[in-house]
Length: 370
Image (cartoon, rainbow, N blue to C red; front, side, top):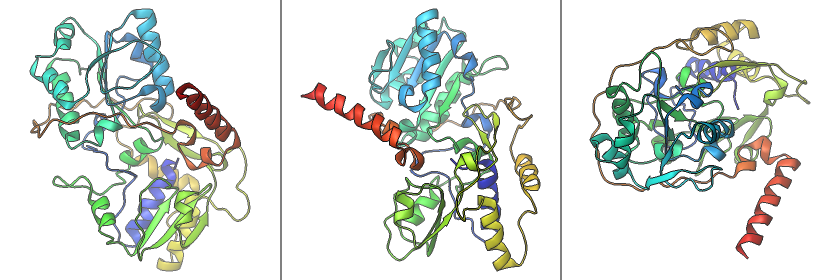
C-alpha cells in the first residue's frame, strides 16, 4: 500500500546511508525488470473483452483481481470466449477447461503438442495471464520468459495487441518495480531473501510490510506504518505514518497506469508522512534533507518511472524482442495458493467490517462441510 513517493524516498534514504539491501517482495516471486512489459497486465483491463481465447496460468482472478475477473466473465458470457486453465483455480463464476495442473502442460503448448494449439491457430487475440503462484515455482523463469517468447513468435505480441500479462496481487508492486526497489543480478533473483534467511542483517527496516516471514534473532527491527500488526509485533521501534487515505500519493496499477490518490483526512497523533520521516532521520545522520517538499519529491519520482506519459494514462508502448530461451528443469505441479480474501493487508485485518465478512465466509464454509 506504499505510494510511489514513499517507495522512492525510502530508496533514496537507503542509498544515502550506503545500503542496497532492499526489496519490495514479501515472498520469493520471480521478476524480470529489464523491460516494463515483463511485469504489466499488458492487454489492459479494457481490452479483455476483445480477446478470442483466455489462458490462466497459476492464478485465481476471482480472488486476486476481482475487476479483471468480472471482465473475463463478461468476455466468456457475451462473446463465448473459451477459457482454459493450467492449475485449478476453483469456482471463478464462469466455465473453464482444465488443461492440466503442472508445468509439463505449459511446455506442451510451447512445443505445439497441446490440445489448445489447434484452437490458437485460429486466434488473433489470445490472452495469457500468469499469476504469482506460478512465479513462486522453480520453473518460474521458464514460465515467464518462454510464455513471452511463444506469444511473440506467433505474433500475439505486436503494436495492436499484447497477450502477455502478469497478475500482481499487491497494489504497490508495479510502482516498486518501476522504481527498481529490489536487489537482483543475473545469477540470483533473491539476494535479499538469501541474506534474510541467513540472518545477515543487523537492522531490518519495514515500510508497511506485514507479510514478510522473519525468523528474528539479533536483528534490530524498525517498523514504519499505520495499521501495523505482524510487522509491528516483532519491531523494536515503531514509527507511525499515515494510512493511504491520510496522505497524497501516486500509485501504479497493474496496467502501469499512474493514478493520483488525494488524502481524505489528516493523520492522527504524531504520525508523519513517510518521506518526512526519512527526511528527519537523514538530517540527523547527514545533516541534510532528502527533499524540501512533496512537489519536489513527486517530480523526482515521476522522472524515474519508465515509459511514463501522464497521470491516468497508460505507459507508452515499448515492446521488447524475443528473449533468450530458458532451460526447462523438472515437472512441477502448479498449485494455486489460496488468499485470505478479507484479510489481505493490515488495514483490512484491523477492520470490523472485513472481520465480519470473513467470519460469515468461514461460517458458511463450515456449515457446507458439515
